[in-house]
Image (cartoon, rainbow, N blue to C red; front, side, top):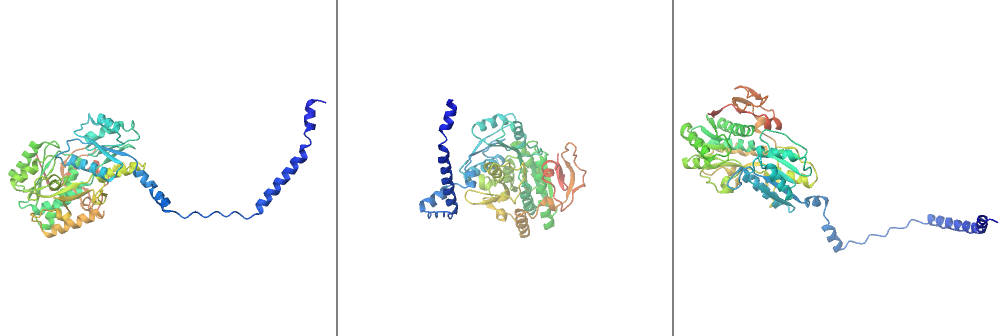
Length: 441
């Protein structure tokens, strides 16, 4: 007999044993199925220790807020003693104070040629949000946006609206607070002449001056006054000596008794104080924040809270979301500070006070103007009213010719009353002065 055949025959005795085992297993399985389902044991009562442990477990939102964020701001000027960069710097500090996981770092006096080198230096220090606080030196950030896809870059808007998925553009609706300042300025003038020391014709400057102009005109109409607005350009944002000379010219030759500015040095304020006329401030509460002059000279200022915008960027980054690419918030948007104080994007301020209370107690402002200031401020904070929607835009025939967009002829109605201009148009195409302004050579 072959060996292979022997093995098969030798294992035949296993067959009955296997059959018995299979039958036994089937019997056990059927018995188990016929039994009632087992009852789940009740969960133990939570103890104090387990409750404390559960409380310590971070929620999804808390985990997002714990994500480390470094906000870096490149300032085009020095910070100390400036209202523009000073306000941006204050915003960075307030953001870092509010969020334990956020760090604020910066560079000062950044020009277009140093924007990218400084940005890469800041990124090496951990920055994941890098912002340029002026367009001329912020735009170069778009050139490295693709190189650093995990970093959010941002730049203030002057008139260019270029964006990328990680290159954000932003500006606050400062014209809303400037409108309120205009109401006050109209009430203050006795000569009927208001002067503006301005930087140079640009969409940003023209737009802000338009807000002030509409406020002056509404205030003058309410008080039945004839008020002139004189604007003279410096040719630069910061030129203390030239700003000073222009301020003196406005006072001596054009008899202005209320002075404001769209330039950046403190010279116009110094001239106003020396001449004993009223001054209307910009960008920051200069009396309350810096102690510049007093409410004997400063009738009102407007304060810009850039932290509203930077907070939106930080929150989006912590949630892993893309921030809005064109950010243009107004008084309806707010920021809650670490101490719980809620502040709108822009507001009128003076010596630490806000709203109507910010008007200098030495200023002779009629109650009807104060009431209108309070009414319009409240409406704008609720998003119910806006000076640029309410008023028609009638061209003064002066301004800045843009490619494909020349200054409209004097008297042209560019936008009717009651129609809201788009954000893109306001930010990039508003290139003409409103009727009623005198632009001095």
